[in-house]
Image (cartoon, rainbow, N blue to C red; front, side):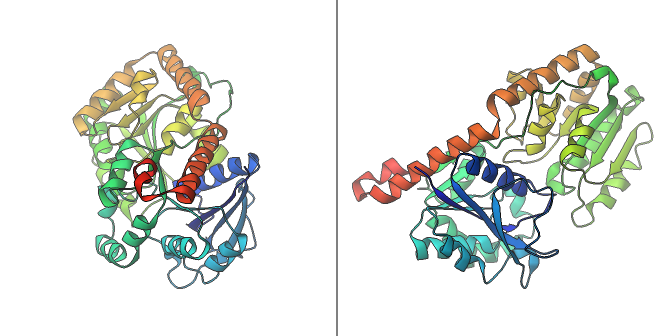
Length: 385
């Protein structure tokens, strides 16, 4: 059955956003499965009629952001989504107007409401602007979460975060994907002796611990460099640079954000990738690094224990001493060993993380939700939770 699927989010065309990557890729694959898919949101830069050249998602309806731009408010979103006559309303991200719009549209259209929190219910997320989030939870966010017919999450930990607020929720764990082709992996001997950390520069990413770990091991690996890249959040970059300046034995460099092909090229020219986050609902950069054959060291705050099972990397807690130990071990391995790990990682992505397969799982979830909301009776509620 063909579905009419409305994605509702905040700002549509922010490149430095994992939510945007998921919205773009998943909407594209749903449309490729012949489902009528449209992405609704706001844009704070340029004309809402101008779709960036790099956008590869489904068709969009973008509106100029009003009032607080980061909140994603527009008076037009609800009316235009209702005019689209969706069979499914899928809200991506919380703490923005998209949550309010999703709740209003569910009431107005009767279509099932699905929410993807994208990690925004984690404890680490609540530490950012905690007073604003307490107010949001009191005024609209809890109502939206409790009204949802289903939740799409990407890890068991995120499922528990949802159930902590909405104990009777229907929660489905479906991983995110990655655009991966079976391209030949760049030979490890041709790559830079570089550990790449690419993420938003903010406290929850564990970068302070990574820098502390590098200080411990750098004198043992003077020919290696730690390169930290990504968009700065609230001036955190200056704090990291100050910490790095005290590392006298090893190189730590900072560079700006990279996207798409340029990002892949930097990853493919690094011998190792590192994600030391305190908490991640998925950690899309891990999948992106694996897709180009780069072994990964990820913290246990990320849902990437499969790195060990697949022989594609390491999964360690993010204390400086354990990160240092993992780095010392990984950087001691010969190129042939790292290259074999990279090949296993790419094979894993090809088997299990292709967006078209994940889109099919999401459609099955939508159909389950639609069946539950159409047929549920009081005695059958447990079947739809």
